[in-house]
Structures are given as structure tokens and as C-alpha cells.
Image 1: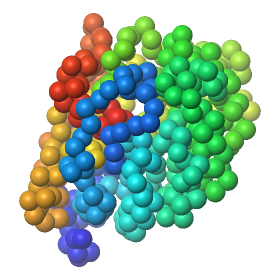
Image 2: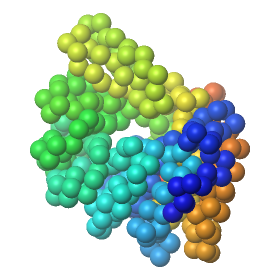
Image 3: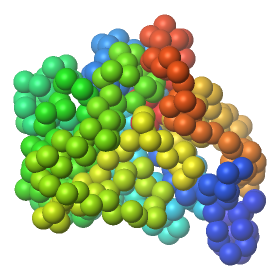
Image 4: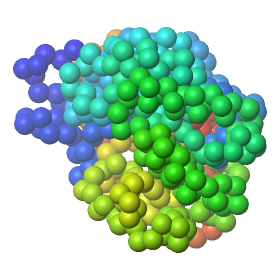
Length: 355
């Protein structure tokens, strides 16, 4: 741990966050704890067989907590645990407890597909997890099976119920909308979210990582989502919040709030303050990045926290990534990477770098 009296490398003396070449601060860190998942969602992991990260290369809980400490010394205040499916990592509440003890963290959250959440909800809450986001792409069990390759829809709904029961605030439900697949469920999902006191966030289908079946025709756009919902509910009001969060939020006439993450058609690169640490210690500055920074090698070679912080600060200060904007400007746009390339470098998978 860095002494409180010491200003970390390249952090501003008043505690402000480290800024990149476009003035974007290093505020948010997504930490993948495993690359493995128990679903095979068509928009992320459409195949059954994958090349997994070698287990000895995965960071230990102590190493993860230490890396989080270094990042927070540079201005990170929001930490989100991801995967793969993070609940496949054994004893995850223990890691949550370790990270929650870091006083610099303002928001400690978890993203999960919900299949295993019901059995872990109470322990995660007790360990100090602040918030949880669960995936729910459909309310129809048969459609869920077609989308994910698994018959675990009931477990996901049980996970959502458990999140409410143990008292997690600001519950969010993420839904990836695909044309001709689940674009007829927007209003149903809004109503479901209202019933369980959760904010639904619709996500445009993105051409990242394992989305090997992506085509532009399958993208149901933000504009189309708003048009469909307006035809059902009437005038929809944008909240116009000044936020670096990925979702643009809207309010229905009855006050219900929902969000849309339109990374495909309306990128938000200019306000992106997040980066990703993989389960084996590679740091990615953008979801579309083709290469990461190997921090595990430094860590296990005996680097001090100060040396790790200096390396991170140097890389972030040089950052110019605008992956989603550059993809949106592509004329003939297809899947970002093919299956053979993914098998050669599993770090290119979205499920490896924390989605």
C-alpha cells in the first residue's frame, strides 16, 4: 500500500484522476476474475469450445486486491467485478471483502448472468458489495435456451429476486437487443423491471470479441428502441445527465427510468473513463483494443506498488483509444475478429476482458 502522505506518480496533488491525451480520467476499472462462463450467449460466446486461460496464470485474490490498490492510488474510484461469469470463481465473497476494505473505492459492483447469484447473494452483500447488475435478455424460457444454449432461465429470475430480498440498491438489468431475436420484448422487460424495482438497460448488439456472428443488420438501434417504446408509452424524456456512465437514461411519462447503451451507433468514447484488467493480469484500455499491457509479469517479478503505478500512469497518459468511434466510421463493417484468430489469442474474447 502506498503511504497516505505520498502522491502517486502522475496523480494530481488535489486527488484528481490521471488524464489521458483526450482529457479522460482514469476513474473506472473493470476486473475480470475468470474467463469462463456457464452460458453460451449468441452475442458473446456462440460456440461450445474455447481456449481458456491457464489457471496458474490467473491472478490470486491477493494479487487482484493489490492491483486494485495501485489503480485506486491513481484515481480509480469505481470497481466492477466481471468475467466470464464471476461467480464461477470460487470464494468470490472473500475477494469482495478484501477489495471493499479499500477506502478509496466509492462504488464496488458486480456484473453477473444471474444463474448462480441466488446462492451467493447474501454472502456477497455481507462482504461489502455495493451494487449488482444482472443480465436478462428475455422473459421467455424457451427463447432464453435458444439464446444461451442452457436451460437456466428460472435460476436467473431467482437471482434477481434474491438481489431484491437481500437489499442491493440501484439494481440494474442488462438486455442485449438483437433484431429478430428479442426486439419484441422491450415493453415487457420495462414492465418486469418496474415490478422488481430494477432499472432496465437495453444494449445495442456490439461487434466485439466473440461476437463472431455479428452483422449490422442484426443491430436494433437506439432510435428504433425509442420509437417502439414511444408508440407504447407516449413521449419519452431524455434525462440529459452529465455522466461518464455508458447508458443514456430516459424517463417514461409515468416516471419509470430506463437506459440505452448505444455503443454501436452512438459511441461515447470521448467520455470513456474505464479500462479492463483480465483475470491473468493484462490491462486493456478499450474494449476494442487488439493488445493489452502485461501487468502480471511486473507484479510477479517483484515490482513495487510505486513501480506498477508509474507504468500504469505512463500508459494512461499516452492513451488515445476511440475504438467504438473508429468502428462506427467503418464502411463495410463485419465481425471484429474471426473464430480462428480468437482461438490463437483468447485475450481478444469479450468474455476474457470483462465485457
